[in-house]
Length: 223
Image 1 (tube, rainbow, N blue to C red):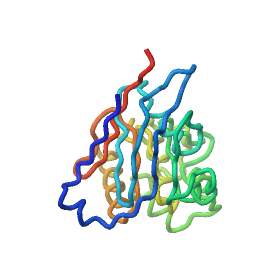
Image 2 (tube, rainbow, N blue to C red):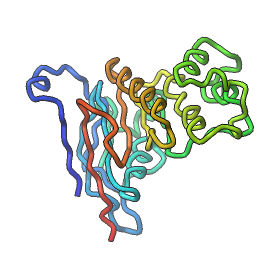
Image 3 (tube, helix red, strand yellow):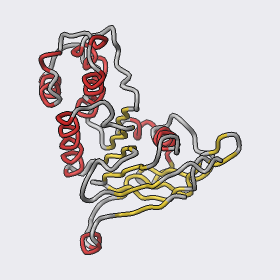
Image 4 (spheres, rainbow, N blue to C red):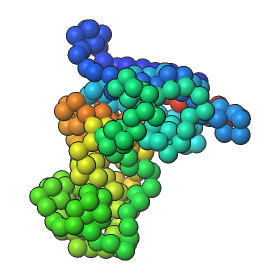
């Protein structure tokens, strides 16, 4: 069963001027003709943190992959700024950044080369330096990613959220493999993005953010 909770106090909601960016209506996905999770209805506004919470195998990643266009829903609709998603894919994809649960860095490239690959830049620019400093990777910029620890690789993968000027971040288990310093850095980045009217949609089996968070509690309906 799926529930939705909005922890924003009611008196703040009354005066909210947030603009709805994503609307999910009766969204579902079937596997072997069986629904993976109950239909989802949700509006995602500017400045929202959205936590997709559930146990391993509950369908969190499936939902994220639907939202970033890697899977098609079995039923329901997704609207982006009031327009059916299929009618505005270019605009939508230009405004999202997705970091999956696998770090997906190129082990044969250095940290710096990975940033160039992710950003489309072929030289070191200020944004690269600032991002490396933010994630504590400046001293590793010339190291091959294949020689890094799992936590360092995760940081490299997460740099794309700062390299790309995207309205919406989709993050799958973003805290995986991070040490306490890495978790703190990421949480600050997520809060800053939210405060700048960006949107963060993240999947995690545990509570990792405090304060005003919309939650999708999801569990697998396949038995």
